[in-house]
Image 1 (tube, rainbow, N blue to C red):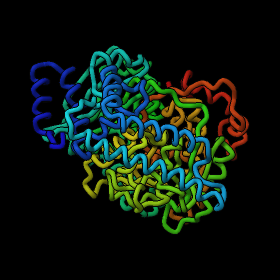
Image 2 (cartoon, one colour; image 1 turned 180 degrees about the horizontal axis):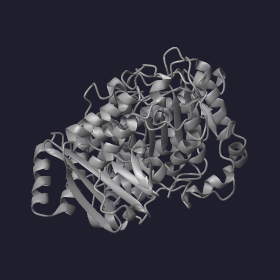
Image 3 (cartoon, rainbow, N blue to C red; image 1 turned 135 degrees about the vertical axis):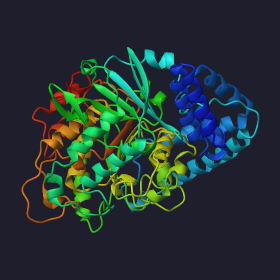
Image 4 (cartoon, rainbow, N blue to C red; image 1 turned 45 degrees about the vertical axis):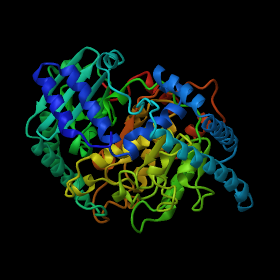
Amino acid sequence: MVAPQPVPLENWFVMNLLRNEPERAFEITDRARRQKFYSSLTLGGRLLALRWVLHSPENLLPDVARLQRQDLMAKYPRYADLARQSTELSAEIGKHPLTPDNADQNKPFAERYESLLRISQLQEIALHEMALRRDPAELVFPPPLRFKEFRKNIDKSQIVLSFFATSNGLYAFQVGADRFEHWMIERPAKIRADIAELLKKWGLTERNKQVDLKELQSDDWQTIAARIPQQLVKTSRPEDWDEIRELVIVPDGPLWYCPFEALPVSHEESTVPMLQRFRVRYVPTVALAIGDPRKTRPTATTAVVTGRMFPKDDLQLTRDAAEKLESAVPRVQRLPGKLPASSSLIGKFCDRVVVYHDMDDCEKMPYDWSPIQVDKGKPGSSLAAWFSLPWGAPEQIVLPGFHTVAETALKKNGNGDEVFLSLCGLMASGTRTVLLSRWRVAGKSTTDLTREFVQELPHATADAAWQRSVQLLSAAELELEAEPRIRSGAGGPLRGEHPFFWAGYLLADTGAIPEEPESEPAGGAAGRDAAPEKADPQPKKAAAAKAQPLPGNG
């Protein structure tokens, strides 16, 4: 489980294609992704398997794992007692705010967190002992791909487009309720070069480089963008896509840096950006694309982190963004600079986290960077610490300050693994929705986009909420003085429809459906309708986004 196995898995994959067994080959692509993730973990994913079997929500477990939970708790009564203490203490902590309102309350908060941490550390010691014994523990996450079952769960309005990079080539699979196609992509090096050239046309050559307004007013990039889908996707007939509303993408290799959302597609005798034609979301493995049994809660505790998103940026910008989020979403709490416990522990009691902060430690990916940033570099701040007990993480996390090699037009020769493994790590901890930036835009466009997205999450699926947020930004005229990535100077007005401002965001999501609230929570509808600078002329109708196609959605 620890040893990387790409070559034998690739050979197995190719052999099944040669034997004309593409369904089996498709399953092997996900097996290869799972193995890549496991080989990056301590003890090859064995600890992760035990944590999921013993502590994840029961409705996520197959029958064999439920039986394993019963057997392990019976075999290790001391561990079962620690688990009971952890559950009780977590319930007590959950009754209080994430952090104290004033310094006088610091001690009791810190003591509760410290007690939970002590119990969890004892559990982790016991888990390490279990991991070396011959006790079975199902590899629950990422779930295995079983083609026939997977195909039955695909809706007629969905298409899953999956890519698999091997040492010998790049393969693509297109799966729908009534279709299954596969092909080998010619000249993958050309596609990578086109992606890099497209990013250069948008002024993305350095992390902190300001972009000239004239670069964003030029249409030179459109010819390059049109070439990429022609090389990647084989469509039998355009009309076959007429009823498709959602596109789920499983990238591999440099395709993790490809802004699919901005690529042009045919629609009503014209071409439009892909995100206008479809709702788009990503998943790190195919099996995560369909069938998340958990619904998102209508009310959620949202933690907000503020800081500088761009060098020499005004701190007041993100503080104002946090205030606007507080007026638009109920139960928002800002995390202070000094926490009563590590951010990984506090994060387990958040439903949602929004980080308005430049993530300048992304070089430490995949697991040594800090998702919440407040205490980065300190023990318990890294993504690796999120794996540890108590089980759980924010269900939704928004990271608009994330960095990838897309911001330098792929000059650093990234292979996408740092994005893939980071997403797997977040989702393995319990997160279901991740919005991160391939390149950091910062500025008011970023805060407006993310605020609209977050306030719509209780009422729509994540990809519908994101599509709507981009539509609102595209229709608005930008305040260029509030966009630090745009070089100030002479130039006409600019609308938010340019892909530079929204195509850099990657929405990874398992497709959970919102739970309908029995009644509107206090501050809910009123907070959304009263949100400052609301661009939707009929905000109350946005709740129906999950049931009806949005404008421009075909």
